[in-house]
Length: 122
Image (cartoon, rainbow, N blue to C red; front, side, top):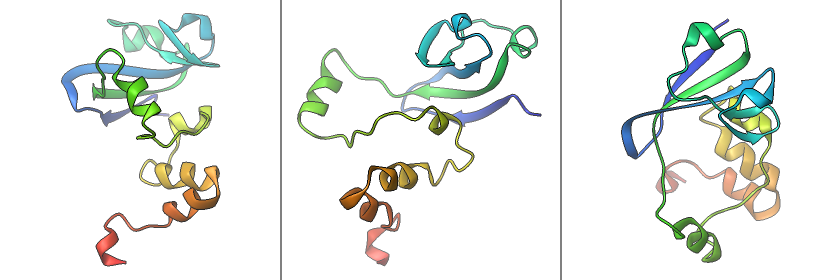
């Protein structure tokens, strides 16, 4: 079984590496996220931690915001918010995840989930 799936994040610091993992013991996470999910400590060795993780996703690069920027964007309703589901972090359908979360949100968002990636072809 492959423990680490690798993805490109971004667009900030594309040389940075962030590892989101599901821990056997959530107390081992360097930064807890939700339930058994958390971030792996910088400098962790894959061989040392592979037995303590159930699965992990490695991202090169990340998205970041300046102080207060994200709060301002949420207040301006620039984001579609939906409560987190821990299963989303390790969804096998990475290309369909956005649509699945919109469909789960329901009503108008479920309709938005059916839009093609390029609306001009609709």
